[in-house]
Image (cartoon, rainbow, N blue to C red; front, side, top):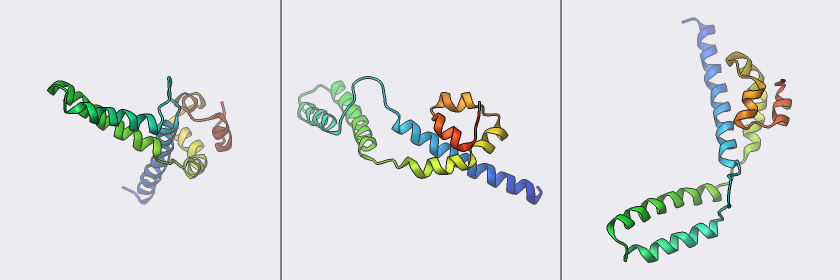
Length: 126
């Protein structure tokens, strides 16, 4: 492998990580359909599960256990602050080159959730 090839691999990996991190942050912060849960409503449900757990049959306890685990993850996600600004800034720097090199179109970026203004800043056009 030539030194240029190795450098291209390093660049590709670094840019891929930037794109992945930004898209994952978009996914985590994207509003979901339906009624929104609040940390308080999740805590209330966890308390309800705690109160009903001992009197439930084994299968219901199993379902409660899974629901409790799911709610704990959801609560952590809701209370975690995602600062998307630095991720967006890094994404804007590399998005055009990354997209051209990987055949990613404006429409594909938009479909996955990247905003038009972000793409405009990055120089990605239709």
